[in-house]
Structures are given as structure tokens and as C-alpha cells.
Image (cartoon, rainbow, N blue to C red; front, side, top):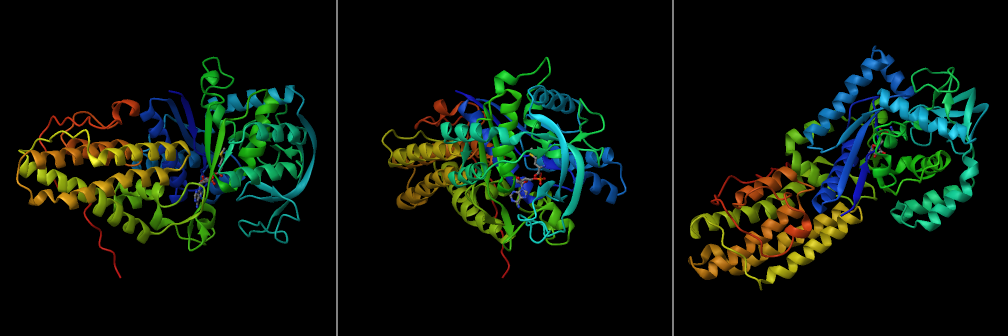
Length: 510
Ligand code: ME8
């Protein structure tokens, strides 16, 4: 058993959460749940990024004070995560005093170590990205991501000597081949470093909505510079009651592909400059696209994509919590882009959930309730399903281990498919009551027990319900996987009832 500290990006509070933010959060949640199932000491952090120009502009546009605006918006993220059954251990808000304290300590350490100096910054800025562009990297003075006109900036700023870390970063990448996954994203970050690093401006005098620079009260830190440090704030960096040694560097940052440079170049360099190890691992995922376009709050605000119909809460109201979670985890490999659509959710729901999982549970419960006296029989040791089940446990373990929920769920569903095929073959609904029928149903119940364990990180509430329906006491996550995953442990204690369908089919128009 190990230690697993998993984080999502902290989301900007310029607007409400959407399906894109839910994508990262649900994936991180499922990974955290898997590690808890393994018995690992697990910490799952999410939260909101509340400083910066983008957020203060949004507050002004909405006629609110920034403090009031971020409090309201941050609450909407918590509500969305509650609706999606997200099991975070900590929710950080960057306006909290604990965060200001950690940022000032951390950046104070970098300053004391001689990696921060004053200079004049001149360049182009995109407020939506909260990022700088050179003229060459822009599209004729427009942001390459948002298409908006970049703002010319000139200010006296404090700079971080990022250029001093080029060699150390390359060496770190060479020595830690899986620091960034998938490999394509690792290569992207590596080439960026190899291409040469420029020092970066890390403070602002033009805005006051931020963390104050401890050695110069005219300046606040640039939002990215404070945001990244949230991963350390949550484990108490710079505070007497901190748990940095327990959780650092065991961190796994799950991020979207547009923020690679911040997490895979700046952040490890900042850690080195402050005298800390870089984080253990960054996993980069792709984007959910609608009609080939990234789904983002900024684009919605600019009228590009309408998001109101696809807020996480409206989705869970329409399809149910666990089906939405399942879709987000199963549809795309966590590393590639994927097309998001309501039809896609309905399709997954009908095939994987209603036809496969729901049908399996319903068939088995119906036969056991009517032909086995309502009690679940035991599995046979030499069942043909045994090796399939063992393969599913291995496949799921490998998938979750590699940050690939899609393949973990594919492995789990292979057991569902094989069990349905086994039932088709024996047609227990046509068999007489007796030992032969009991043997078939015992095997099927055992397969369902294992499915409920393996699918629990994705669909925690449904798996609890399946566990109850097949007459088991407790929950699928009560024992650690190494104990619960071996074949032959089904011991029903309760009566099995037919029950209502777990996933009533959805009618798809057209
Ligand atoms: O970048 N598909 O915050 P943010 C998949 N505050 N994931 C998406 C997505 C999409 N269409 N749109 C957004 C920030 N995301 C900073 C982060 S971390 C120290 C600071 C997800 O609100 C994805 O994980 O713009 C992306 O990285 C994150 O939301 C960006 O959220």
C-alpha cells in the first residue's frame, strides 16, 4: 500500500462550472476512489482559482465586488461536485488566508535563494488565457486560442529566473521517464524546454486582486504564480501544522493539455528554486470538443458555444449521476481529445448500462428470486468465468494504474459481457431448480460481485445498490481490493429481489 495525492486544476471563478471542468474532476475522483480501494493513503484535492484579471473583470461585468463574486462562483463548483458525487478531501480557494500564507512563504524562499529579480516587462497579454504571447507566437497580434486581440503591456515587474533551470529540468525529465504522461505530452514539454527558456514576469502592479508580494507591497503575484502553489498550500506548506513530508512529492496532477507549460515546465522549476522536489507525476488529458471546438467558459462568454444546456447539474438531472460519470470516464482515452454529445451519453447509457450491466443484474436477480428460493447460491471453483474474472481484475488494475479509466472500464465490461454470454449459453430461465441451476447462478452472482467492486470508482452509488440487490452485506469498497478480488467470495446474506430496472432505457429521437 502506498500514498496517492491527486489534484485537479483549480478552476477559474470567472464563470460557473461546465462539462469540461467536470471531466477533469470526475476522472480525478475515480482515480482517488480506485486508490482508496487499493488501501493507499489517498488525498484528493480540488478547488477554485480566484485571483487574476479574468476573474476581477468577470466580477466587474456582473456588478459585484471580486470577493463576493468568487464566493458565489466557488459555491457553484462545490454544488456541481456534490451533484456528481465527488469525494474530494479538500477544496481549496486561493483567496483563503492559508493560501496567501503558503504562497508568500514559497515565493519568499525562491526570492531568498536568489532566483527573483526586478526588470521591465513589455509584451502581449491574453486575459482569457492569463498568459503572455510573443508577436511570433500570436496570430497577427491575436490570441491563438481565443482569437481575441492581445493587450500590449509594459510594467516594472519581478521576474523568475526560469532560464537557470533549463539543464536541471532536462536532467530531471531524463531521470524520470514517466514524470509526464502520456508520452506525446512529455515530448511536447521536453521539446519546449530544449527550445530554450526565458525568464518570466511573476508580479503585477496594474491590478490589486491577488496575493501581495511579501518584499514589495506595490506588487501582487501574477495569478499563475499563486495558483500552482495551491498543491502545496493544501498540505500545509510553510505552516507549523503542515504535512508536506507526508504528501510531497507523492503528488499526481491531472491537467488539461492547454496548461502543460505551467505544470510541466514552470512548476517543477519553481519547486527546484524553492528547494523542493518536483511533483511526482503530471498526467495530461485532452479536451472535450463540441463540433470539433473546445468547450470553455471563455468561449461561452464570447458567444461561441452555448453551455447552459450542458452544465453538469442539468446532465445529472437528465441521465442520473453515475451514467454521466461513466460516460466521462469511458468515452475517451484520458489523453486524447473526444467529442462530447448528449446522443453519445444516451448511446452509452443504452448499450453499456441498460443492455449489458442492467440486464445482467436484472436477469440474475429474477432467476434467483423465482427459482433459487431467493437466496444466492455459491460460485463453483472451476467456473469458466473464473479466468475471465481474474483477467478483468488484472486489466482494470492496469488501466487505473496507467491513468486510463477507459481501458479499466473496458476490462470490467469484458466480465459483464462474458457473464451475459454464459447466461445465454445455459439459459437458466429455462432450467429447473436444482444443483445445476444453482451452479450457474452462483457463478453469475460472483461475477456481479466482482463487477460491483471494479466499477465502483466510476459508479459508486450504482455499485452499492447492486451489492445490496445481490444480497451482500456492507459495500463493495469495504475491504481492500487485494482481499476482495479473488474468485469465490460471494456469500449472500439477504434475500434477492427482482427490483426495478437499474437503467430504464432512454428513447433516442430520430
Ligand atoms: O486553467 N475539455 O482554469 P480553468 C476537457 N485556473 N477539460 C476541460 C475543458 C474541455 N473542453 N475545458 C476545461 C485554469 N477543462 C487555471 C488552472 S491550476 C494550478 C490553474 C478542464 O477554469 C481542464 O482540466 O480554465 C483544464 O486544464 C481546466 O479545466 C482549466 O480550467
